[in-house]
Length: 270
Image (cartoon, rainbow, N blue to C red; front, side, top):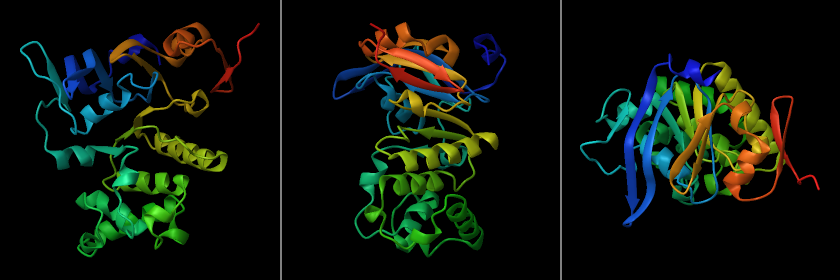
């Protein structure tokens, strides 16, 4: 998809002159961007560049500083009900794994997508329709053999698949993923990559953060580069995933290559 073709797509998130402060420190500065349906977007940038904060604006866990010259809209609304939001967007953030207490079963984690609370008491209140949805997700994400295990006893890959199943209980058309491939071994990375590709083929659009170029999905058609709390570039993978651009972004000398739709980093040519 070309940059020009984005302009004809309808947007689901609109940022205008957005600034965010956390503990009196400015972490996002002058964000002006629209996110569109039909795009699969990766956000790249060094640690501390504001990537996760940007995504947290989308789940309303962080709010921007408002002013006469700024606005932030989701689905063309400046104010949106949180439950309406969860039915439209599925979220996966790294800290979710730490929020689950010891002793909470994997099934209860997935069912909490409906209640927002990791507790078996709420699992018992599920409707038959909700139980069917959960069972379908358990099978789709190959979790049936561990469904009664404690969540905290699982591998990182199993936890990630469970939380993605949780994000899909309302069958959202959009997924927001904060470093979904972080700390995964080779097999888990492959399984997760394959499953997310299946979601994309079902017309679910994703926006995600990754630090590894080899985790960039071939179906990604937009790249947002962030540094020091600012969006410094926005374009297609072919435009921005380049040796000089990424070397400047991460302040390191690297050599970037593309092979069969996937990207790799090699040591610089000497």
